[in-house]
Length: 265
Image 1 (cartoon, helix red, strand yellow):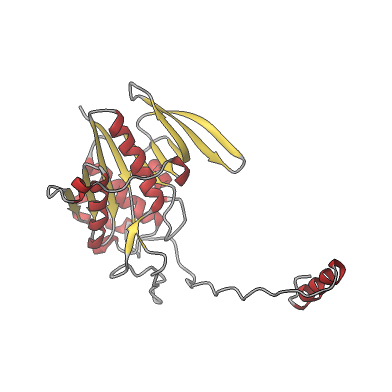
Image 2 (tube, one colour):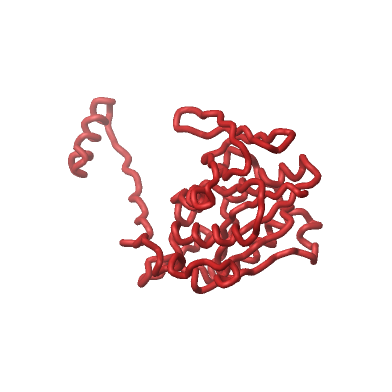
């Protein structure tokens, strides 16, 4: 029986083209150039490394988003994934992290048995780092976040990981199945292969809310407990100021004068 690895990924807006709906405070995704979320690319790469090591590994990428997110799944398959699953339905649109994890969890339950799940630490369009851990909790899986190094045992019963901390790392051994969230230090994602790009037989399934049998009161904008108070683009910082002075003492004096003018001191 194949060793099944799931990768939770997200198509995110290019950070140079972000637009915000002034009424809902959510990102406008339709028609915006999008990319595979960077941390999710690291998660996919580690799953593909398992596939490189063992012969009977099946890698499935699961995502939720608008129809255009299918292009991201094509990219993942061109990198080496075996199949992609897109959860796309207006009923799940505008979901916050809690509602998103409800939908993805329902999709994973519909998928069936698996051996482990990878996800990126966080998405660059939200930076919450909440969806992966929430999915793990709802599936009752052990989890390790901020994974910077990964090793799987030859019998594929357990993994040993390094979890990044602010001042170092901790080594954790965890039994499978489990949820791991990846950071950029874990690996360098591979490029799409030419054969993968031009392979016409790309296995992509599109599921709607009815297909995954999710409770509609737990998904979508109205079901999301997170309320966006205000979304805005930060104003650019002003240009720097060159301080003049004939000596270090004069420079220090001028610096103090400028800081007092700005009410810094």
